[in-house]
Image (cartoon, rainbow, N blue to C red):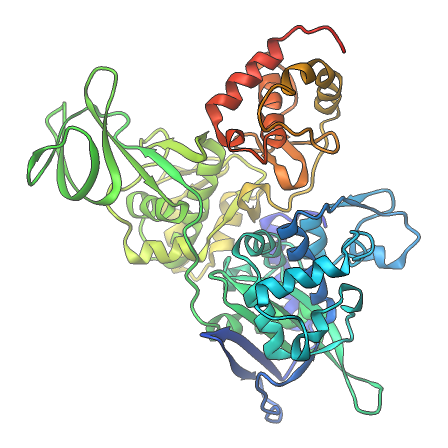
Length: 564
């Protein structure tokens, strides 16, 4: 699916009025082991009441269960190549093109997830769902017993569908959610991100209800998946899923329970990077080193001082000269919220949402990856970050925009000075007070940018042929060294190397892919070796030891073994 710019996405909102309207929307979610329901109305006769016993068509939701099973069991999911001979490829790619797993899920490419293509065995499938459901898939769950029978027309009991969604492990659910966030960005709900932010992570479906006489009933469109905190959700109304999402987005967003996503990721902040610290003093005197819990006063060499509060996320270390320095370690949303508190405010919510996304984008583009954490300095040359815990209002905005970034441009922002590709805070506040939504504020600041999901998840891979060729030619010379390394397992196929648009290079071990920049220097070759080693050592604890991997990568690049 082609990536849309922010401004182009906004233009789609004008299409909402032209969509065939649904007079009601049925909504359900699962909380505390029970199915909760609500019905939204838009004129017309009162809809028939329903509860968790309602039978609903599975539609294309079957792909979501194949996806989560394959991710959790590490079942290979090779890209699907379109031949142009199957009409179902219209949901996948153009003839001669390919589609990878996350795009296939967001675009509903059924050919990708065909159980036969992925060689999913019946015993392993049943054992997996029995383990996670706590019971065999029988009775009301019998529809899940055989992957080959997960057909769109299969009717399932609604509360059993929600129960299965609730059973999906957090790790594979997180990967599915990251892919499904594209639905409100560039999928069938492309103009609804302003209402949902990143709170809705759902797979859309369009089908028809079965009638007792066997004929096709009314067309039913909707979606199912999770809210940002893992709450299973389902909704449907008469019409196609794209029209349903656009028509009902404002009211649906208001009707759904509030979600509070976990603060994933890790950010290390070097506080006061440009201001040498003289002392850090608490109620018991100067702090020489260690975690800070309570209230403290930081005194700088220039004589200024600053009061702060910490609950253990800040610590004092000593630099090579013996001077104290303050470092923080926190989740990404806590970091983003502290940037909002320091660089702007949460008072004007739409401006605050735009700043949250800009701050997260800046972090992704400029932080260094150190021991699994993004590391960045607190300074006017980078991002200023409050040393105090985030205010509840700022944290709510950070969570509401969880994982959302601007892609395709180098993101900058300033308090009051306009410049290209720069969010100007004073302008953002003025636009918000004029009734502009956060996506409109971002479209004005970054006209060539696109809203995306942090970490390149679901992005198309632009192959770097030269990088791949160099790796293929060099690997034979490395093998005599690598077979001596504990835990090394050669990947089953040469990794695919994709061009990295921004941020630090990384490897997707589950997909055997490396994201980096084109080869140009010796350091680029070391980077490629480094990320390859993460894949080769993926099953071993040493594969997460950045220092060890970096030393080995440099040794491999400089090695001059004879070809075997």
